[in-house]
Length: 176
Image 1: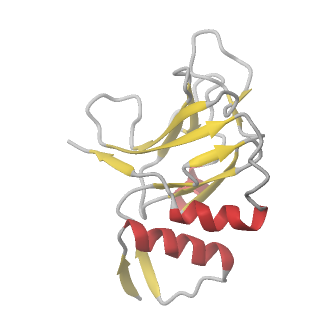
Image 2: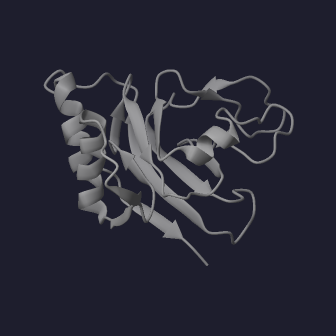
Image 3: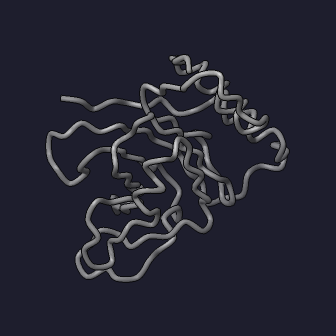
């Protein structure tokens, strides 16, 4: 199998292509960082996170009010268990997160009950790393904006995906 290395624009096209058509196994896709599409989310939208392959084992989301939600974690202490089993996550190259139903327990003292993560308008940060609680450990990061208002009617549902690929968020590598 041949390796495929893509830049950000080619990656967006590849994501759209793989979501619309059945993927063909002509090459192994190497994603240099994570990508989050669309970069502007509204109530009911699905956040698509494209993961590097292989990718680190933990994923978390930070809300605009600085609540930290562990989506995939290597430790399962108390209520902070992974929403997605680690084995299943390790095999994933794309993660689809429905904004209106995604729930987790915020990483706060005394918190025990899951909350809807995308509940406030603002910027959300998606972090991917080997140990997200460790300091100085490299992290993949992307940010998206979320609005609690419904998507404007001038954006037909079939064009959401096309627009998402054209305007994906800029990802960062916070390495050492």
